[in-house]
Structure formats: C-alpha cells, structure tokens
Length: 201
Image (cartoon, rainbow, N blue to C red; front, side, top):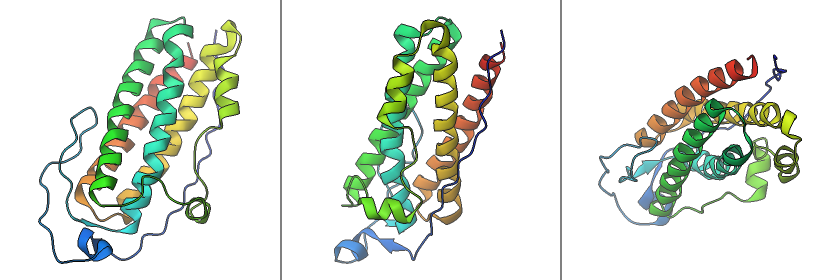
C-alpha cells in the first residue's frame, strides 16, 4: 500500500561574517592548524584553528538537530515492522550521534558555546527541527500509522539538515566543517531517497 509523501519545505538562512581564528576570538596569537578531517562515523579529530561565525552557528544548530534525529530514529527499533526501516533508522542514529559528538568537541576546542543564544537562533530563522509534541505524536502513533509518520518526519528532519549544510558550504570558512557539511548534504539526500522509496512501497 502506498503511503503519503510529504511536501518538503525548509528554508534556513544564515549570513556568513568575517573570518576569525580561535585566538582572534578568544585573545592571543596564531595557532597551528589541525590536520584531521571530519568523517561521519569516525572518531573525533583535531580541528583547524581558523573559523568564522557561520562555522560556529552551523555546529551549534546541527549538533542538537542531530541529537533530536537520533531520538526520533531510535523509535524504529521497537515500533517499526519492516526490517528495512529498522536498519536505515539504526544507521542514521549511529551516524548522527557520532557527528554530534564531533561538533560538540570542535566547539569546545574553539572555546565557543555548545548552543547559540535563543536570539541568535531567531536571527537566523529559528532552530529547525520537530517539536517534542510532534515527536511524541510519532512515538504514540497507532501501529498501522507508525512507519508512515516516522518516515515523513525523518524526511523533514533530513531536509532541514541539507539546508543547513548547504548554507555552511556556501558561507563557512573552516575546511573540516565544510567537508562535514558536504558529507551531510550527500548522506541526507541519499537517505531521503531511501525513505521516499519506503513510503512508496
């Protein structure tokens, strides 16, 4: 039976500002650049010293967004009926959990807050993602409706991630963060295709 496919609408606006190094924002001189790059699913590596406000905002917004996605994806373990849905959701949860850990570690290394102030989120279009009420509605959905509701919400979540990643690619400075954004764009695009296919079955 074919399931309804959502209309995806996601606009995330972020204005990139001037570039700064860690020491320029926190005082002091030049620092050396880290060499390790971010790979979803890989261990946290060193992060380069140079970054701009767009890099910081991307990490501050994407890390909690990833954590929310993990919470949502884990609902599939007990409630999804199809193994394909369980497997995809488990892979998404594992990847996003590792990404979020890397993002938080990089912000800490840069001596930046883990999350932006609410007014900063509002200035950039608000924090994307589902509300706790919406997640609860999926968690409590009737068995016959659960997979459809879960996949629709996960598609919307991944679309939000794509929009944020593309803004970072266009306006960010730090090479590792921009590489991670590119990987997020590619992986979420592929995941959306998989989920749309599952909805169509």
